[in-house]
Image (cartoon, rainbow, N blue to C red; front, side, top):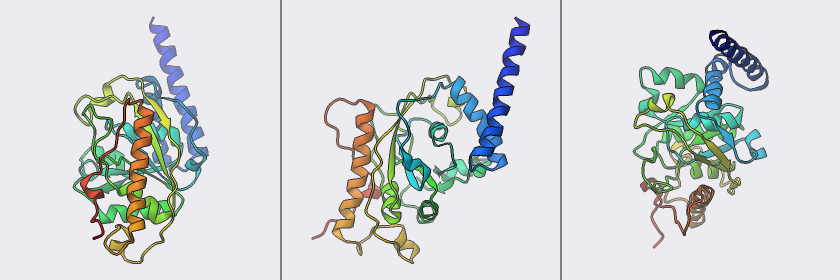
Length: 265
């Protein structure tokens, strides 16, 4: 029994080292990111048993907004397994400033953001990354959904970045995410996670403004058409994710406070 355990442990180490070398050579991760990401791969496959129900869309190879439902603090790890390239996640600022969690997040070049509503600084950074052909990860619900509803009210940040840059929103549905009531609890919880990619949603590029505030919002100066496009993107994403979840019956995703705009008189 002891010899079998040694053999199993040795096999895991060899596989991890081989994957680390492959990842460093074939991805855009830095050496430090590669080292940090390898345990995610091992834990994802062995503890959380992550699998994918369909092939990722070709849009993952260029700029895009990866927008997923949110049931656990480790959801970004699952999407990262599929992307196989750096994803710049919009992460709640308190996690980024956490004495321990922040040290893990910073090397992955996450984008700190506020939960309370539109964060101009973080949205501007997401726009810049998307324009550079990078992937930006976002959770339109804005927080972990611990309710029985398929989705919480949806915020408009992901749609806004897509509209301002012309990149697609790529929906993902994550099923089976472990969650025990805290940020750290999923790290010790087994699970069977399944990820399904939706159909990329392409906006019409409305162009960019030189003003930071204008670049990160669709305010009164924008046309009714732009307002409708923002809401359309939000609702299309929500409806796709709900459909992928297998939710029965009609469901109209609610818009969060940050997505509601004034209607024309």
